[in-house]
Structures are given as structure tokens and as C-alpha cells.
Image 1 (cartoon, rainbow, N blue to C red):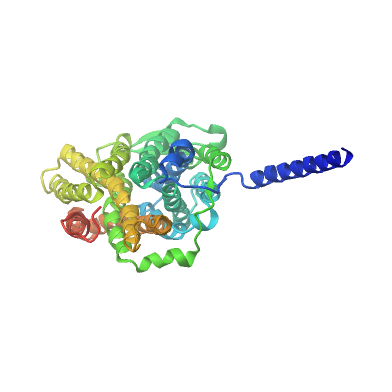
Image 2: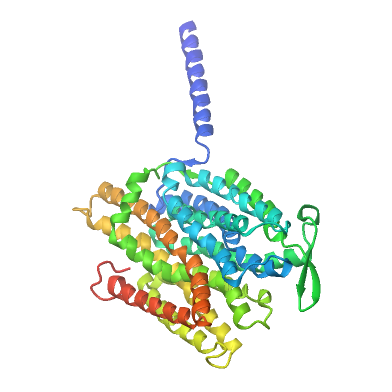
Length: 488
């Protein structure tokens, strides 16, 4: 009996140690999903959906703020000449465009980080980094001696917000099963894209309403046609600071890393050799590149072509509508096929710029209503196309990898192929969005160049139409026609 008692005590001790070890391992592994199988219906219904949705809901506001920071210069550049900064029209277009150039670089780098650092970890870090340009904007615009080079540097730092899109979309793509990726990615990006419209709505309210008076500093005097108005341009930067802090904290406490999502940089960058990477980069430039470039360039374009219009009152509405329909594009693609939807979208985008050109002063008599409606059609089509093209990407790479499995009944081989396809698709999501980010730079520069050389933006609008026609033909030939290489 004594021996049995001693053995029982040892067993209890071992159990206690094992329990303590288990608790410690759980604590160490907190926010790390070791077992993640979203395509397993039972796992998804019992465990996966709840966790995936939580990560999606925390990802969306972080991405919204990233977009707001990325495009905030589209609001600021309109006001700089009114508060004493002597910059040319072309310089102002370049300030609006510079975040697009740096954003493309940051997106290319961020495209590969999730499998290396973890989605939660990188979301926290990248969101926190948005404090750099927002705080610097707030101080720089209050100093009338701030030179153009400083503003250019701040604008380049705003490109950090663009980079967040690559990592965020890649991260969310790992959480959802194939059949729901279009909807999930569309929701994540749609709310993110909404940051464009919100920046163009909230920043002017903060500037004119004098919000954040304690932090914001003194007012500037805005003078137009002899009428003086007080405003606080610095608040276009400061207004985002507390929201960025809250979003970073929410991501730290609520998001997760997926342990099985692991790949080195060299493994992922190999995707650049795949022709579908470059095809989808071209098509996504046609949709998202257009959306972001049109959003940033529209206020300045409207201001130069219809100067009597108070652009800040309604310029934000068009990108907001484009952002809101993005989830609808993903949803339609899940049900009807991404390529089919995208073909029709590029058809609309081919015609709309020509209508806008006809409505310009000096061409069709200056029809403001027709001009705005043509741009609204482009924003809606681009928003839908953002969702449909992003649904196509993971389907393409997963399908290609599944075709390589000799025995479709080999579950282990199929699972491995799908994991590789998911990683390649995520890298392509990120890198194609990096290429598309150049649209933010290219479209304002195209407007400025066309106006400088010809006195009108007509040449730029005609070029856009030709580009969209090439996207339509490419989508149909590669992915939509009968017998296409990969139907999606």
C-alpha cells in the first residue's frame, strides 16, 4: 500500500508537470494556429469560420486606415496653394503621384512577408508604421518655409499604406476555403478601398472644422478671390493618429499567425517566372490601378477643368462607391466566374473614358454632369473588377498545381499541391497589387503631362481607353474563352 501511495504521488506529480508544460506551451503558442484546414468542411464549420472571420474583421479597419494614409495627399495638394505654398500645377500632380511610386515598391516587398514573419505580427508592425507620415504631415504643413523636397519625402512615406494591402490580402487568403476566397478578399479589400473615399471626406472636415485643436496647432488662412477662411491643414494628418494606434492594438490582441504558412523569400519570388503572374498583374493594373489612380487624380482634374466646382464636397463619393461594390465583384465571381465578369467590366471601362473626354470644356461644350457620370461608371467598373480579378488569382494557381498531381485520389498529394498553390497565389496577390499601385502615380502624371503638352487631358483619357481594350482582349483570350488555358 505504501508503495502504491508513493507511485500515485509520483503519477500526480508527473501529471501536474505535464499540465504545467501544456499550459506553458499553449501560452507560448498563443495567437499561433498550429492546425489550420479551411477546406475541410467539418473543421471549417466547427472551428475555422469563427477564427477566420475574427481575423478578417480586425484586418479590414487596419487596411482602411492604410488606404486613407496612402491617398491623403489627394486632399492636401488641393489646399497647399491656398495657404501660401507656391508650387506649380505639375508639382502638385507629382505630390499626389509620389505615394504611388513608393507604394509600388512597398507592395512588392510586402508581398512576401506573411509566410516569413506571420500575418498578425506584420499587421501590427505595418499599421504602426503609418504614424510616421501622418505625424510628419501635421508638423510640416504648419511651417510656411517647408520646401518641396520635404513634402516629397512625406508623400513617399505615405506609400507605406499601399504596402499594407499586399500583406493584408495575402494573409486573409490563407484563412478562407477556395469557395469563399472571392467574398472574403472582396470584403477585406472593399473596406480597405473605402479608405480612399473616407480620406477625401474626413480630411476636409478635420481641416475646416478645426478638430484636434490642442494637438493640431494654429489655424492657417485660406484665401480665394479675396475671401479669407480659417482652416487646419495639419489635421489631414493628425486625424488618423489615434485610429492607427487603436487598430494596431486590436490586431496585437485579436489576430493570429498560421503556423503552416511558412515559406522563404526565394521560394515565393520564384513566382515571378510564371507567365500568369504577369498576366494578372496587367489585368489588375487595369482594375485596381485605375481605381486608385482615378481616385487620387479626380479632385485635381476636376479642379483644373471645371474650376467653378467645389470638388472637395463630392469628389469622395465616386471612390467610396467604387470601394463599396468591390465585395459584390468578388461575390459575383464566386458564382459566375471571375473571368466572365472581368470581360464585361473592361468593356465598360473602354467606353467610359471616351465619354468623359467628349464632356470636357472645349470638346463637347463642358458637360459637368456627363463628365462626372462617366467617371462614376469607371469607378464602379473598376471596383467590381478589383473583386473579380482577385478571385481569379488563387483559383489559377491552385488549379495549375492540382493538375500536376498524377493521382487525383491521392489526398496527401492534393493537399500538398493546394498548399503550394495557396502560397503562390498569395505571393501573386501581393506582387500584382504592387504593379497595380503604379496606377496611383501614372494616372495623375498622365493628366499633368497631357495638359502640359496639349492643354487638355483628352490624350490621357484616350490612352486609358486603349489600355482597357487590351485588358479586355487579354482576359477573354487567357481565361474566359472556350478552351482557355485556365478557365476561372
